[in-house]
Amino acid sequence: MKISLKNRAVVSLDLSTGDRLRLATDAGTAWVTMEGRADDLALTASQALAFSGPGRLVIEAIDGGMTIHATRTTHRPVTEGTTAALPHTRQDLARR
Image 1 (cartoon, rainbow, N blue to C red):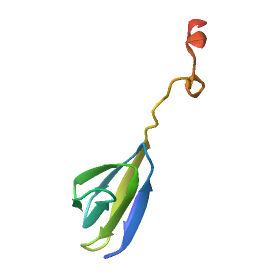
Image 2: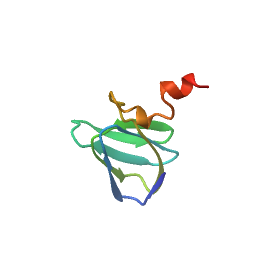
Image 3: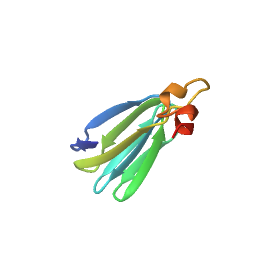
Image 4: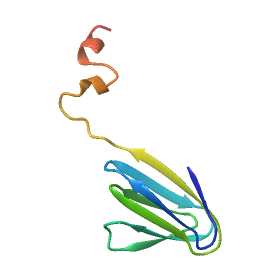
């Protein structure tokens, strides 16, 4: 997804448990903070930052307008007894 921000504009994104978000930009600088982390980060051109949920991510453009490229992936652990979530069971594969 693309996030377009004007100078000093702020956007927040909520990440759930298992969510991962990668941020990158081609130009400009953004201030980025993640709920629960002690450090704030600067996202600058040709740099990427990665975050894991849960928590709220806050992004502010601090050096002019910018477009941030955000890639979200979700990892949900498979728990015992959830073979229905898999595309095929062992029995299905043995029949082939």
